Amino acid sequence: MSNLAYDDAPAVEPASESEIAAMAELRPVPRISIQAFCETEGVAGPIERAGSDRRMAKTHLKVHMGGIATAIDFYHSAQTPNLIIVESRDDPRQLIARLGELAEVCDPSSKVVVVGHYNDVWLYRELIRFGISEYVVAPVSMADILSVISSIFVDPAAEPLGRSVAFIGAKGGVGSSTLAHNVAWTVSSLFSSEVVVADLDLAFGTANINFDQDPAQGIAEAVFSPERIDEVYLDRLLAQCAERLSLLAAPSMLDRTYDFEADAFLQIIDVAQRTAPFLVLDVPHVWSGWAKSVLMQADDVVITATPELANLRNAKNLVDTLKKLRPNDGPPRLVINQAGIPRRPEISPEDFAEPLGLEPMAVIPFDPALFGNAANNGRMLGETDANHAVVRTIGDIAHVLTGRAEIKSKKRPGLSDLIARLKLRK
Image (cartoon, rainbow, N blue to C red; front, side, top):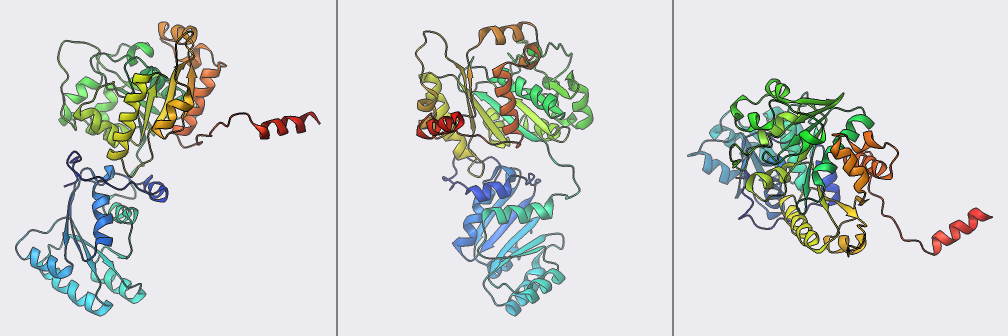
């Protein structure tokens, strides 16, 4: 079973960069049951790894060792699932005959994918004519398996899902929410793109203050009435903050406790991703089942930290945990905030990033006047001072998170810089 059963799962080998790139555009697979019957570990391994991917979180996957013969024996007394994956090393004509026997014990509505060891055009045509959904030639990768399952069960005509980015602070008060809100505003204004901000800190959320909003309804109504959540209902709960920016606000009240199940926000996120191309998830500094699920399911995660020891320890724990929870995604992003506070001993950005194994996406300097004025007036930094260096940095972050740019490592001045300057003088 793939369904968020990660605590007791064995360590999963991280995906390669090519696999991560191949899977980046795949949509989540719907709630289906899958059973695989494999003859070799080389096929069973990628299928098991695919089952641990976040895009398969809703599926129920079981891998059996043994090929078509094992499947035939199994389905003599068991109901067939939505999808059967079988591996066979039989020659083409023997494979066709064995699949005929399998068809006799399978429900006609079950889809079948065959992983074979013969790259044969005649075999492929015969299998498709026979009603097989797909034929894949071994060796296969995890990306191959996910792509095949997605092509069968995800409607190609469906609207593309919006990209979700979760922001979380390595410690309370590091400015994660401020960064999340300003990145959302920047994406909406810079790229003329629809953006939804979801404030998941129901007790102490600040998005309504930062955007100078006081909506009567918000995310609490959605999370406490999951049976009502659809695009129409969600649209009624959204507050308009700017021309292309909408807010799913937190009540920021203590009139009730906010204890949720692990999947409490996943339906809201699914619906929100269908309403806008960019979804910002403002995750509070907590570690709970639901926070873990949100971070695990997001397309991208941004960790905000200030350059001191407790933040480094917490950031290291977050990075290590997220890499285990998201083995088939890129590592989380790092933003170092409030750098350069006068007379405060700090860890340099290089020394902070080195144990995390990450290149900081940005280093934002301490500027109490800019941030204080924006916060007190319920305005974004770009509205307060559009030409400020910090505003340009947030614009760079927006480019990276929307896929319009990549992080560029900044080299320290050295011999090459000296030579370049001397050439310019000539």
